[in-house]
Image: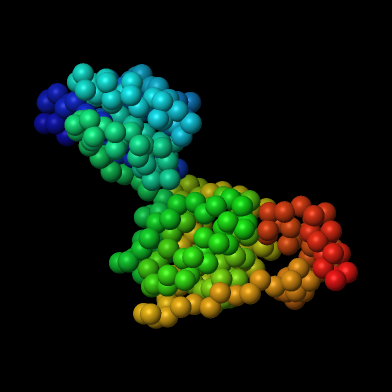
Length: 293
């Protein structure tokens, strides 16, 4: 590092990975680059400023997030072509991986600007290596669609193209139960899954098991907090096409929930609404229409 510090930092775009929770995961090289670039393009300048303040880095920062990346890119490309050294960071983890940065990197390459990766923390890979699932063949798929119907369609498409690769998703706490329910409906209750929650942070947790057992464990909690990395191992034999479960009626789903967790129909309806990300009153009206047929 001392020898590197004697050399001027070469012009170019530096894609700098930052900690996903534990500040100790920043690399020495990342700190050196952040100190020596001309400016830092950030997903959120307020979030990045906390990191910079912690390590006493005074490099100026500008915003470059999902809503302005394409508008900001021409300005940054011109600065890079003029010989500037610019670091790009996301709020946490590796830029461009379910975070802004891929567009700017592609445009920089097209403009003949050097693009230099500064590796570091990544939630998907950190979860994979500690999951216990096969890691030689995997697919990172980012976030599933937010709406339940589109999410189910996406999972069914993945199931139809069966493979033994471990699938890796990111998921929000308010959608995780719905996603687990869809996984169980598509692949069946014995699907192997791992949930990695709050990676590298104080409350880091891994929940491993079948999708049915993991969904029961998570559903029994009073509150679900933290960001999730979800890993799925379909373990389908070569050439096999997994059966897509026929969606059950609302009444069947309520009966299943009562069988798994107990309680009356009112409690089951409340729990189902939470799993599906829908309102309890909407489900109640649908249930009445279903029973009137």
